[in-house]
Length: 333
Image (cartoon, rainbow, N blue to C red; front, side, top):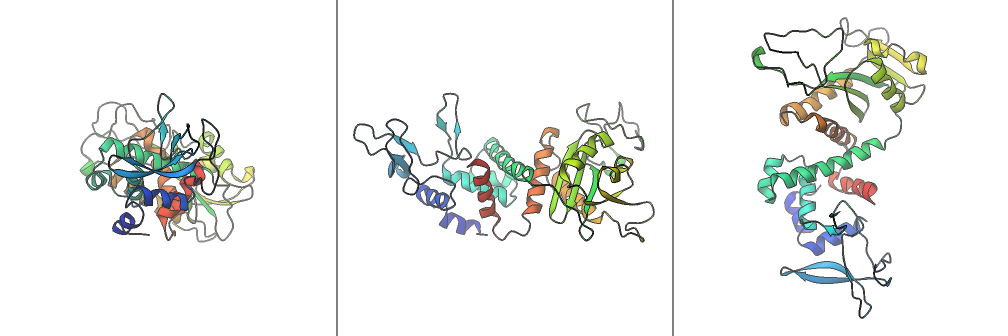
């Protein structure tokens, strides 16, 4: 993957290099390769350059005399533009600025640092980071069912994504915005906080190798978790879990389910069943979301979980930026 200096020099040096790069990646239409008709007269459009604010910008123009309608080079890919209330293509950022923001998202650059480097506002970067997470979400949702084998089983587990007080001081409550736990085994330690304790949110996860899928759930009971397992796992798959009662009927639903009692062993000495891989994955996800980001809004938690799952899926990628652009093409083309 390019360093930022190489990226600026080779890709976003100007709008013409950016358009050429995106056309090479098949993210934008090239009228020299695929015929693009004029919306007004139906003639095939040509590549042209148009001077905008002192610099040349690639555009498409109708060659018919009397028409000569212009069309933006980014037309055809809704990731790089959006339509306003009048259904007109509108985006105040240039392609170079958009690609630069995408580069910082791929590199996991915090927004406060990206603000300084790019000169964009906080709200602009938040919006574009969220758009990039939408790509991650759609790619993760396109995965097929997981197939667990004896040598590589599917590990399932649930974890609570909530903050922790230092030295057991300070309020644990978050108002009444989060889902209240109905777990019978949850210990209630109020520690002189006022009001009802909010025990959540809960995240349910499935993991097999680099394929992990996390879902924000209101409860971790059987009625909530079982439909997710049936939807995400192929029939006959080998599944490992702890002895949480919600998993008790998996064998009757066509899965080969084995458990480990964590009060006795981390790895069952008789069957070799364990959930060490997904337990370690929880740690990485919590470090990113709870410590590095210092938490997130409850309605944004699923998108950040999808981003983590996407990065796990692309963990062995040699050029993550190119792979992410290919995923943008798959989603928006």
